[in-house]
Length: 231
Image (tube, rainbow, N blue to C red; front, side):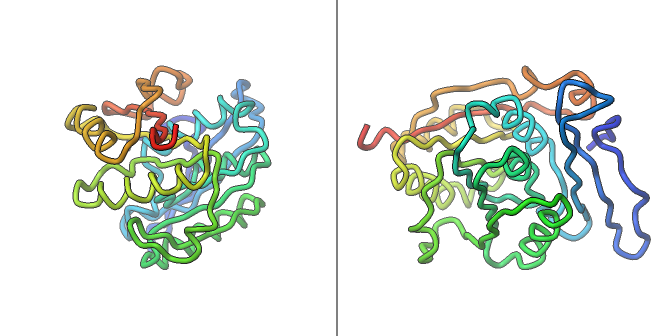
């Protein structure tokens, strides 16, 4: 990822751990943002320990849609460094951050970034397609997923989990950002298979502030998805 301007300011990386802390600002005034979020990153160790472009775009979308999110329960799937979920937490929402149960270092880092940003979020190990007891109690209004459509072998497990969560919380919406590598038609095939429907599809850069777009690249889309079962 290219280095951005002031919304991607970084401390000098540690030679021993290659860890950096990135800063992400939100608000219309570049000089006086409404709030900033700091993220511990370590790209060498795990994909879940780095803030990817899809996460930046989804976080910005949550910020811009903040009135719509007001008072909601938010669940982030495959959260990794958790930027979208942390934005939701800064907005005062009830947030649960999740990632694969086997990724202990990633889950531990999620707790650390919550402490770093002085927000309270529930952190939960949630492996897609695995029905642990904790999954059945989740009833989010919004399900967030940034760059969760990267491994085709995991798509069915992901969509099975998303479908369950949407059905378990009527009226909920899955909002995801993803690199459009093979065309939206493949995503449409999976949605049809699992009884889902895309109700909004946006170019991920269409709503991004100019100073944030310059740090990004690729063909990223944002989709809002609902269940058609029981509707």
